[in-house]
Structure formats: C-alpha cells, structure tokens
Image 1 (tube, rainbow, N blue to C red):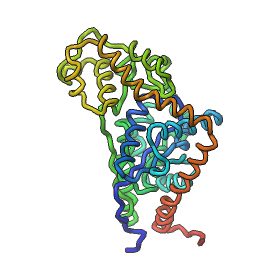
Image 2 (spheres, one colour):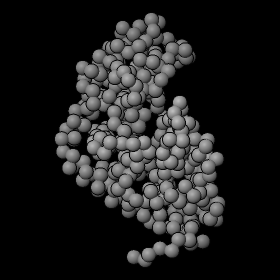
Image 3 (cartoon, rainbow, N blue to C red):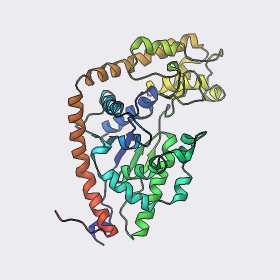
Image 4 (cartoon, rainbow, N blue to C red):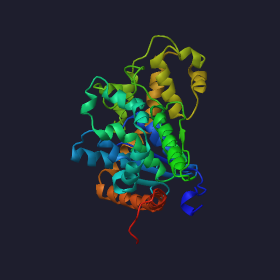
Length: 346
C-alpha cells in the first residue's frame, strides 16, 4: 500500500466554518464562536473558516459580502480565536475546497442529496427549480471543507449534524471505491446548554438575523444598552422558575432564557434553576441582562476596533490561507493520485 492509500495518524483536528452572511447574533457566539475558542485553548489543532463559497449559493451583493467576510473575521478574533494558534482564513483563498468539492460531487449520490433536509427547508414555499445548483449540492462542498484537512471533529449546530453524517458517507464511499483507507470518519461535536439559541420573541423559533423584528435577537454589534433592553423585554410567562429542568418542558421562552444564562456562565440548567427557582422573571431578566452585557459588550467593542483596520484583517486571512493551503494541498495531491489523474510535475 502506498503512502497515499493509508490515513496518517492525525491527532484530533477540528474544522468548522461559518457563512459570512452578515448579522452575527448571540446564537452564533454561544453556538459556535465561543466553543471554537474553547477548543483552541484545549490545545487541539483547530482550523476555522469563513465559508464565503457557501455564501454565494444565493446571490450576494459583492460589497456586502466583502464587509461580512471581514466582520466575521473580526468576530472570530474578538471571541477569542488567536490567528497564531488556530488557522483562520476564508474558503475562497484555498482552491483545494473547490477542487475536492467537484470530486465529491462525483462520489456523492443524488439520493443522498435528496435526503438533505436543509435544502428542503430553504426552498419551502418557493420554486425549488429556480434555486442554484450550488444550494442543492453544497453538502458535497461542506464535505470537502472538512476532508481537505482530514479533520476528525466538526463543531456544528444540531441542524448541521446531517451534513457531517453525509461527509462520513462520502469518505466511506471514496475509501471503498478506490480500495484505500485514506479519509477519516469525522465526528460531529454538539455540546453545551445553548447549542440552539431561540428567538427572544418566540421561543419556538431559532434566533435569526432574518427575523423582521430586531428585538428577537441579540446582535454581536449591539451596544450594552441595547443588549440589556432586549433581554428585559424578552417574552416570558407569568410563572416563577421551576426547581427542575422538567418544569421548563412546556415553557419555550423560559427554557430559552435559562439556557442562555447557563451557556453564558458555563454552567448547567440545573445549576441556574438551583439559584433562581421560585423567582419570577422580574428578578431573573435583569440578572441575565447584566450577565450578557458583561460577556458581549467587550466583544462588540473589539469588533469595532478591528474593523477600523480592514487591511490588517485581510493580512490575517492571507496568512491563514497560506497555512491552510500547506495542509490541504498534499492531501489533495494524494487524492488525485488515488483516482488516477495525470498531474503536472512541479
């Protein structure tokens, strides 16, 4: 067996990415950005990507896309990602993603893509045939994002777990089709009290930048007064907080706020209820607002500072892309060798 057909022993390697679609929220921070920084600080090799190629599966205004890419980079850094410790870059600067994405388009089966629920969700009530081919096929590109680095772990929200499972299917089929043990089987990492942060106006809906009500979300660019005001006015119910998590089962808004408090304090729902059981939201929401301001206001301030020097942000992304390319290119070269492509010699 040649070197190309065996998977080198790779210690835990994390890959994850966020689309630069603008409007970063508390959900992005608790569900992704903060968790990324925690993994980095655990000493795990970490590769974090602004997935701008995914963003263009729907039309993007070019100027807004550039701004959103830089703003997301600032959010990564302000949330604790150190570009010297982690690899931080935007996807379009590393061509291995697109190259491997095409190869995986040829490995993945149409039936697999037809089972992807996110395409159905995004085209619900619309003319699906008017959607871009990229929107339909982007799970194969996501698989390429992960496997271009032979990543072993992928921090994702629960709504992306299906795509990591598809990545495993693609890796397994590639290995089987070519008789190799090349790609690893990456594991989704879904953890924490607030992996899915819900709307402040409707606890049954995910917090989203697309909600027409700005009061439904905490934006990472909100100042301290705005954060506090939104949380004080968050929809709740008249009942006091229960003693156990089971008491929150039918109380979506209450459960959401308790989850947020638990996530911001790195504690459990049970611990929060142990502190606030029997108390009403007139007591709880001001405490939550004070906590959120203390955590998020410094991030907003640092993002503002970083965005004043977009040249430095671009330099950070360029350096990160060079590091990413150094990891991905040898892996892609082995892929080309495995599938029988005749390649130009260096």
